[in-house]
Image (tube, rainbow, N blue to C red; front, top):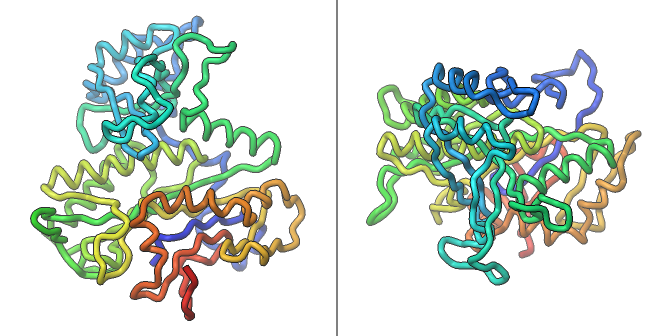
Length: 389
């Protein structure tokens, strides 16, 4: 059972054939398996615009009637604009296919506007056609992500500094070019199925971690998990496995590794798949960090094993004075420095975004304390003594 309170980064190292195990992934061998990978959106005119007849026919052959243009805000909500396929194809004939979104989009929490944002001005959410996927959870729908850009250049630039996908793309490019390092990221998404939420929550079962009883034939939860698996396959997302987790009604799906931006896009699509398939069967799927005060941990959105090429780390963030850097050639010290004690607050910002998540750092039934660990072999961390808050 993986602890939902940690992130692990694994280094790619040389191993003997006698002790080798698992499937080998590399940035050059993984593929997001979007529609663009099948050549559907890759066909273009010399002008660079997508051929409407070819695209329209290809999507019609797949039964696509609507396209969801999606983005994720800083409060982690997924938003979309839904276009009929006819208008989507017209949009693709423009020089910068996209839709306009009011600039406050990145400063809204529900309907509350964050300080520094205003109600005027618009961005252009420019389509990233490499991200188009069929929505296995919504027959007849496809989804695409984009980049927020200025409608007109500001200071000679179109990119928006607040755009999450633009920033991740920039970071990946910097690490590749300056630090000569590439990442693969895979996610284990833990979620809880609920049959009712009012007046109190009720899970469909309480069978426990990796129990076959959690997949009893004929149960709604088995149907949900099977349909999630089928929907992810339809969307081109590699599903490696799924199993029951420790909390009542808790399950986990494990998807394959991709480069960071591709992995983030696939994670959002995976979450949408989980939510929608559960809803189809009259259930509520939640990634709330802790639903039960007297049970094992609930999900922490995701557990993120990562592979780092050309670097090895064994860094325990609970004590910034005890960093261990094993001898290894091609050790980029610039990257190692980002895990030093001076950046611990950034990890709290990333992984402890709500008060409930701090509760997961307290000693619980398992005796586990919530550390963020970098290294390998830290799938579950057991701590025998009282931890300091």
